[in-house]
Length: 317
Image (cartoon, rainbow, N blue to C red; front, side):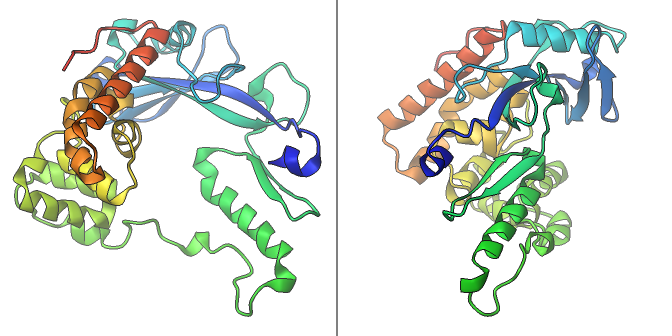
């Protein structure tokens, strides 16, 4: 978009790949998040407990491949295992890894350097006389600050034409996230068909909106069953995601609305049929469309595991 506006490509972004791996918590037994050094490197990685799992990462390497499909590689796995095995008493092997994920940081080019780790993680808002306002860089963890800075720039640009009474600054600091309202009441609910642990799980993920899921389970008790073997997600959460969270694919449910793929890739692939059957009627899919969704998801999981050197055939449906 900036190239169209400015006549030349701004060349303002340098993608850097970051990778995490997931292993069973019992192999690490970390009660707190920790930062550990990587042997023979100047970087450190995080080790964070996540329920019955622990995830380890992230890496920081230059990336020149397909920006739509960054993958964890065998080298990435070896790098992170070298870090964790240098900090624990036992040894974690590739066979212990239950999930991987990779993403790209849109780093703002600020100075010539050979290391992506040296580039800023900050974002940059650019306003042109033409009226085009763009934002580059940033991190997922600072998304609200990024949005606020962009909105503030737009409001400043439109100041002379803004309607009377328009807020002069972004209001995000005072806006509660969806689910914050009703959180305490939901946490104290005794929900028919759900255990105390399941109530805690749903409230922890959905806040006050968990009451909607309570009602779904009360109406259809089968929705209280697990969505993916070995993980706390419930079948109700897949249906809720289709009705209220703009799900479009099986991958949306297993990778993004839940984190099943990150925690247990093969188990999530085995559950793909059930997920398609749950959300297909909500989205108006035919049986052929459901099958295509399942096949696409399993193909993607297999490619991901293969790239990381972790491939183990996913059970056929």
